[in-house]
Image (cartoon, rainbow, N blue to C red; front, side):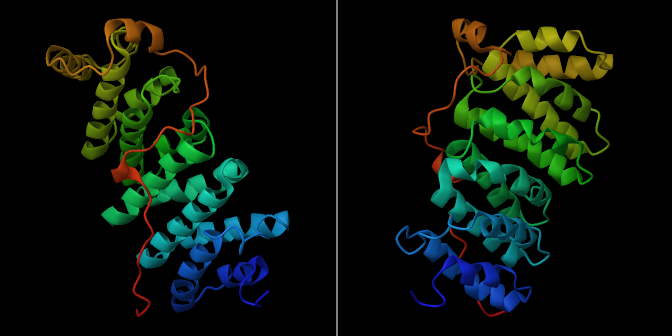
Length: 273
């Protein structure tokens, strides 16, 4: 085995803090992980793997957007390599991904959302991932709060309502409709409308029981009416009765594919700064 073609070598490289070196070694690590025969030793030493994933969160949270994108791409490669065995690392990587939902660059935000959805596709159920995302609705960065609302819309579009306990989302979304940031308020409104579009009238009943300011409540309900009258509901009445606001009851098949636009692609970085 070549001395620079094993997990011990790449673990040491992940520890590097130099930006130029990170941009050089990152694509090599992705190529290594993509070949199961070359990367047979990935899981041989679990403490080493634990430390590697933990260190990669520092890449994802890098102030250099090229390193951040590359870090997201490397974590994505580990997800591809480990699939369901990556489940124990979800709690490690999600805080960094939620932070990146608040990044100033569109590409970083989009890649962070795509990887969150990929975790739902390949490592655990959507609700398992979301149970560990709820705290992000109170994130100190408004873009992260907005990004999490948009991530919920993307989740509903990818999986529908059945794998989600949507009643757990409604209190968070109601709170964010009063957020100090107008973009967060709008994203929360949009998310509530999307929940209504998928599960129907039980959402309206639920909101009427909450202590929302009258004007805000009427604004939300008027949006519900608009989507209902447009004929753009995602479910039929019978489906809505079966799936609305019910607990998660089944595991999503990993055969379900994400929309192509949400797939995580390799980041092509310029190795020259």
